[in-house]
Image 1 (cartoon, one colour):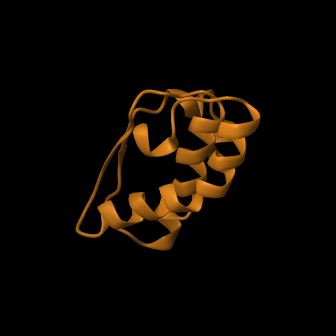
Image 2: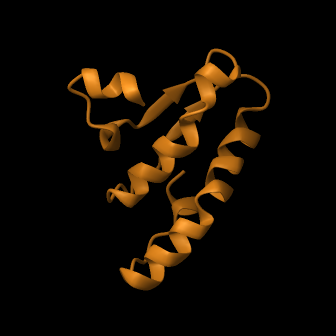
Length: 86
């Protein structure tokens, strides 16, 4: 995510992600990106495409954000869960 700070890209506007392979240097920030998008108000689904194993990584990203989501759903009265948008 550090590289995005150098470019004029709003991470919330990223709707499609393509992973060429599942090395950690290509996937480590995925959970942060997906959860941050939701925290910042994105409600539209994000499409993540990649090789075998990508679905499990996306599912793990949703699990990663469950505690954050539970608190925000209660504190901020949100109605859309991250799993509804990933």
